[in-house]
Structure formats: structure tokens, C-alpha cells
Image (cartoon, rainbow, N blue to C red; front, top):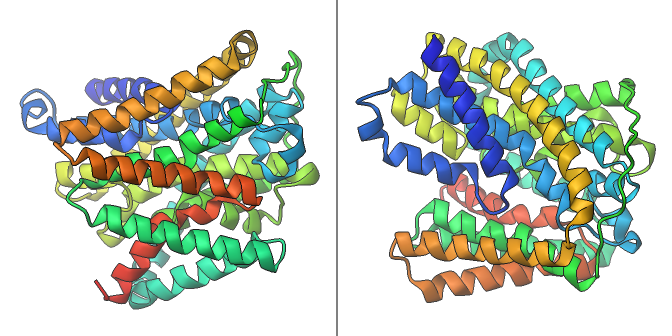
Amino acid sequence: MFDLIFACIIGVLCGVVTGLIPGIHVNTVGAFVFSASPFLLYSYSPEVLAVFLLSMSISHALLEFIPSMFLGVPDEGTVLSVMPGHYLLLQGRGKEAIRLVSLGGFGAMIVTILLLPVFMIVLPPLYDILKPYIWIILSVTVVYMLYRLSRDLKSLIWSLILFIFSGIMGWTALNSPLSSSVSLLCIFSGLFGVSTLLYSLSEKSVMPEQSEQYHLEIDKDILKGIFAGGIAGSILGFLPGMGPAQGSLLAQELSGGSDSGSEREGFLVAMSGVNASDALFSLIAIYLIGNPRSGIAVYVNQLLQGLDFNHLLIMIFSSVIAVSMSMILCIKLGDYLSYSMQKINYEKLSWVVIIFMSFLVVLFALMENANLIFIFVIYVTSIAMGLLPHYLDINKSHLMGVLIVPAIVVYTGMA
């Protein structure tokens, strides 16, 4: 038991590192651990490695909100089109935003665990019924997402164009000789990382002064956000190709909330909840339907050779410890960064992060002996495509076509 708890603690600490450093995806570290597993298994049991990977993914899911809020800060003119975390940050409420994120992740994880008996009864037979129609479910979700997140016909057309072209890029990259980890690192760094920072630099963004005081009241919107995040994250872990953007939209609908006005806090809680509960449920899907739903879940499935009921109990126990530790670390580190970031040259920091993310893309490409010209073309294309939503004033969630389009193609049986 002690070795499992120790693995959980180390996993949480590694998740803190991957979450706080932009460009390092938890699946990348998972790939390293899995690659080294033939040697690690001489000293550690498969359960220890599985607990480490799960704890790392849960910690990463919470901590990654910190750099996403404190980097890529928009200006006040675009505040209505940015995510709730940035909105609160621009109001000097960074500490409050961090606590909302921490509360959302912890609460949604507990909701997911409490509802697990219901999922165990309902989902296996439901999956067998829905499996032939998953591509239809994904397509309907896409149509609704395009409609729901578009203001008018012009934004709808541009959203559709970006969705289709990002999907083509995703299909091309994922069917190239590159490994999926390198492909996704390259694409996501460009679409959502470097492009956001470059736009922020072009707008001469600055970090607003953050208030030392914060007010956090757990009202009905917060509670609805926690519940919606747990449900949406579970559904996200059940359906292939769906990303946090789609899960957040689903959570928004379930909570009856909005990402504008006074309900931003509940929406931020739901977004965090989606991330955390998805980290656990994508692994639980192995037990329920025999199909892992994330990179980490794939590695755990390979290590354990399937998930039995005893493994499931270990994973649940580990997830409670991991999310509890991660909540505390998220609050402490978030408070520290909300204070220290105001003393840092934001422009220089942004350039350092951009260079570091680009370095990681090249490094992992070289480690796989990948074609650097091909990597460069994908990376630059991803950055350019990631910049377009900012200038067209449309939601970046549509760029998740990079994963959804390939999933739809696969489930239709066309490839």
C-alpha cells in the first residue's frame, strides 16, 4: 500500500511540472514512462506505474489552468470573447479564479466517483447500442457547437471553414509516419499555445494588478458547475475525439449557465471539473467498455493488461488522494504566481515560453528522426490557423476539428 501512495505523490508532483510548463503534455511524459516500463517493471509493479500515470494526469488537469490564465492575457477590448479565467484575471481576481478551478476539479472528481455505480449499470449496454452511431453523435455535436458558438452567419461560415481545415490538418498529421504524441504536441502547441501568446504580444497585453483579497461563495451556480463538470467529463471520457472545449460546452448546457455575465464563475468551475473528471473516466472506460479514451488510459491498459474490479478500486482511491493534493498545490502555486507574475516582464516571459515550446517540438521531432521540413510546415500552419480565430473574433474551440474530424472518419468506416 505504501508503494502505491508514494507513486501517487510522485505522480502528483510530476503533474505539477507538466501542468505549469506550457508545451509539455502529460501524454508525452506518459509515453516516456511506458517506453521505459520494461526496465521499471523489474523494480515496480504494474499497479504502481498505473497509479503514477493516473495521479500525474489528474494533477496536470488542474495545474494546467494556471499558465493558461496567466499567459496569453488579452486586452480589455476582447474581454467578452475570452475564457472566464482571463476575464477574472483582468479584474484583478486571479486568486478567486484559482480557487474556483481547484474547487471545480475536486468537486467534479467526487461527483464522478459517487455516480460510478450508475455509470457501471447504464453505460456498457448503452455503448453497445450507440457504437454504430457514434459518428452521428459526433456530427450532431459538431453542428450544435458551430451553431451555439456563432453570433451570426459570417462567424458561422468562418467557424465551419476553420473546423474543416483543422480536421484536414489533423487527419494528415495523424496518418503521417510521425507518432501521435509528436504530431499532437506540434499541432496543439501551434493552435492553442504559441498562437495565443503571439496574439497577446501583438496586443501589447500586460498583467493587471491582482487583488490580495478574494471572495469565494459557494452558491447554486458553483454547485451546478461542479455537478455539470463531473457529468460532462464522464461523457467526454466515453466518446472518442471529444476535447475539453466540447466538454466545457456540454457542461455549460447542463449547468444552464453561460460564459458571460455573473455566471462566469460557475462556468469556470465546470471547465475545471471537465478536465479532472475526464482524466479519471477515460481510464474507467477501460473497465466499463474495454476501450481506453486517452493516451494515459492506453498506457495504463497496456501495463495492467486490462482493468479488473480490484484495479478499479485502486484507481479510485488514488484519484481521491491525487485530486486532494492537487487542489492544495493549485491554490498555493496559483497565489504565488498571481503575486510574482506582476513583477516579471510579461513580454520577455512570453517570448521565452514561445521559444521553449518551439524547442520542445524540434527536440521530440529529432528524437524520432522525423522529417523536420514536414514538422516545420505543420507547426507554422498550426500557428497561423490558431491566430485566425483571434482576428476573426470567433471561438477557438472550433479548431478541435483536428481531433473530431479524424474520429468521425474512422467511425464511419471510411478509413
